[in-house]
Image (cartoon, rainbow, N blue to C red; front, side, top):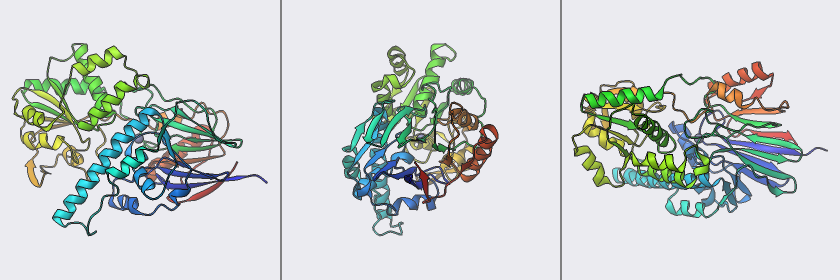
Length: 457
Ligand SMILES: [Zn+2]
């Protein structure tokens, strides 16, 4: 009789966030990623549900990368009894540490604010987890070298293979019995300016493929030209260029793009400030893990020298008061919080200000309101007129687009027995499903949340 493996789709099934896949096989329980649900309220509420599987019975967690939607539920898993190892590459674990610490802090602050203003339906409002829970989680972290096969049990081996999404990111290949399981993680772009192109699998019996941009191609635009033009008009108007940015990866990419413009003398000198405590921490991981990105020591040092890195709030104020034209890159990327709000409060009503949105702005965020040109924007309880010029860069994505996802499959030599499209809105996954059928003749399916599937091994 052939053996079976059971797969539980505990997140990122029919949606982008909350990545969590449990493999029950040969008496072992392995969790691939343990992410937080983000975005709409009905998704965020899922973070409060009990795990549908006892955490104490999970033997191992493997992480594809450090993003919150892949790691953000770990402290709850630990709080509810998980005692095994949490394994990922060194940069993945470093970034996860930064992100989880920040997440606990934000949740504690939100809960405190809700309690003092009595607006929560939960009384008292509680954080999902706190910094102590994060500290206990970090103790279970254990590093895996990329590409090296690791024997977990007689029938189970695994390895982590770089896939170019963010620093340290990988896809995961498991050899279970005679079958290969591939969990794609989030796949990066092949022409990323900082990261090496994603490596590709050569065999997949069971494939779990992300589909975030399954229905789209990234626009062909020249980031450097948009940046150059925004910087030049800021100098002309003696104004400020404010670039809201995600702290992980996007900030470092923007730094690199601006550094290149400086180095090639394509823009006049202008001070560029980095005001993102978390982005700063991530920048340190870039200098710790040099082999994980394309920059040489020399280049990295040169790049850092060109920026003024703000480390305390007093310098934020000094920067605001200084009248000379400047560029400020600050979090958060969708203008939902962070230091960028302090700058906008002072400069959003000034027509010599330019706001450059450097990434996707989700519905319901302040960034989206600014992008849509709303006449007034609310910041810290007060309305401000949007007089600043607004521009966008749309091509800076850490994700492969539809073509990139399809190309990622082109070295697979066998026909996968089953393909599960995960980590995508339903429309995007379905589009990719049809494209995979047309290009490769393979049938793919879209699992739903909490679905359990048995596969032969
Ligand atoms: Zn990601």
